[in-house]
Structure formats: structure tokens, C-alpha cells
Image (cartoon, rainbow, N blue to C red):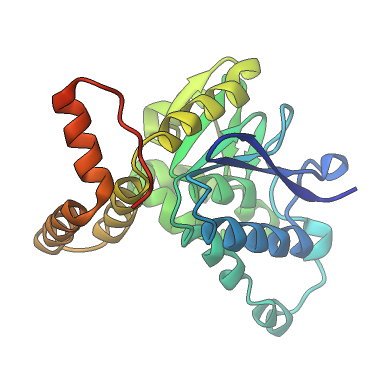
Length: 256
């Protein structure tokens, strides 16, 4: 059985599944490599306008596969170059929605934080518990978590390995929405369909500017925003969108 797979549930929407149910979707090297390949392929596909990342209805991802790492040495871990695999997800130009049911622990939490929206089930649990096994987050957990929830909430999770509920995650800024467990996949697809129906050039520019601007000075970030805004006035979708608004009709966006 494939450890990850892709389907196309809606026009413009691709969904990537984690499928290691016997290991609670633990992220071994093979899964990381498959995810990177999927995101590179979908990121280069103009027919894909939004991506949903799902672990299914029971668990998102319970973390890195400890059996795959326990006896590894530093040089061996270095040579794996897993940062390049994670970069394939981070660099995906389309919006990514993480549909989180159950555990999003360690690498699973880091994986969710690579998304642009996180839809969490009411019984979802988030944590960065690496300190409890003698290490620390190594795929952006210290940095993305701090940017999402602030220093003091991040330190509380990172230094103790404590978990937080979906409702706590929402209050902290670690989730976009919390819905009933049986509605997570539906809601993620609903949002993906909505985004896929919008002009893809504008959607991509919004994502690029938000991510690039968060680590820049305000002046630089505003310049990036201004240039992207101006650039979109050379797109056919801008003309279509504004004409449709004035003509009181639904626009049809081509992606150009």
C-alpha cells in the first residue's frame, strides 16, 4: 500500500494523503521524499489551484518515525538533507490547507505549520514533544511555532513538550478554524474549492508576499505588496474580475 497518495476531489483542487495508518502516519524518510515529490509535481501544475494535506479522519501525523532515527549519527542525519525535502513543501506556490484530525505531534505539527491554513477537528492535538526524547524540533518547529503564536506560548510548548487542544491552538493562533471532527475534511475541501475559484495569479501573489514579508522590515514588506499589486494589473484575470463586478455577473478566471 502506498504511504502517500494524491487524488483530485474537485476542479482545481488536489489532495495529498498520508497513509501510514499502522504507524499513525509517522514521518519516515520515505514519506518525506514522497511528500516532496508530490509538492514539486503539483506546484508545477497550472491546473492545481489549491492543495489539501490530510492524514485521514483519525490522525494527521504523530511525529517523526523514532525507529528510523534512534541509532543514527550526526553525519548520517546531515547527509539525509531533509531540509531540502521540507523546502519543497514550503516553496509550493499554491495555497496549502492542512486538514488535521487527531494527533499533529512533533514532525506532524511542523508539517501542519508548513500549510497556509489549518483546519482542526475539535479533538485534534498539537505538540512539539522532541525535548522529551533528548532532541529538539528540526524541521522549523522552533521558528514557525514562534512566528505563529509568539515567544512565550511557543517556549511553553517547546521547553515542556506539552500538548495543546484544538481550541487552545485556535486561541493561540496555531489553527485557522476548529470544526467538529467529522467536518474537517469537508471544510478543508470547501475552502479549497473557494480558493480554487478565485484568480490564481492574485492568490499566488498574496501567499508569496505574506511569506516573504513576514521576515522583512515593514517598509520592505510594503514595497513587496505594492509591486505585486501593480503587477496584477497586467493580468487578464484583473480585467475579467473588475469588468464582471461592474457588469454584475460572475467572473470566469483563466489564470492569466
